[in-house]
Image (cartoon, rainbow, N blue to C red; front, side, top):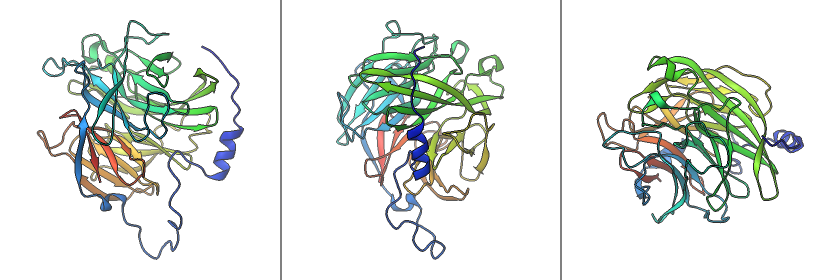
Length: 382
């Protein structure tokens, strides 16, 4: 593993200034606090529209990771949505999972382009088990794309292996793999960058789950992985810290693995969608802590939450999650009030179950892109 010195001064300065991974709140957003309650973000959004298909030429299905591209660089286009596909064309009908190898871009007008088709036999470094792309997806400065891989050899949890993080350049070529040192089934991810330094927050869902054979085990983790970029070389890992542990996880024939999924950073606190227990927890001092906070403080649980998966943070700092157990999106304040719920997918039995995974705000941060796993499309709530 390459090691580089990467100054922490920028991180310290950013924390002092109160910068976060989310966009700053609009001017005057906090004025008159206590006079009136701010309107929930979701209350302004009432229409779900189809953007376009997520299925590339090789037939990969089950879109999971979702990321709005904010800078045109290389083959990445500002305003497009980058999406990772979890399964290959054998699901359905064979039900193979953890076998998807493609990243696609969907433009706001629905135009689909394939950004990368990853060959598991032609990787620049180790990725135990091969390639099976997950919800863990981000784009770092310079167009470096990082995506999680939790691979299987036969599409079942029995053959799931630790996988890795794959680092692709702005043209879709895999330039680096990040494996080991706590990476074990990277499932979802968020990131924040300060100059040459980036911090990845990665959930892991394979610690003891395969051996558990479907029983719940409380070994899911959240890692903070520090990367340092230099020139045209891919950003290299310089440190890994376990900042969360003890999350519930289990294998599942319909979803391969169920465990801590959505993550979002605001004001130095990392929020985690604890899928198995239908709750959201908060890990304080996520950028600077030197050890695990366990599962963190419980922000909210149950109520309208129903196996929350993907997560996004609104400009004001509210937490958006989509339910794996139904077709709803839920807005929760940082104090734990569930202030809005909307059905955004009504297909399937029960309605919307298992169809919603990744979500991301659009460029203007006033609409929400989300993938519909039932129809293999990208939709937008606006």
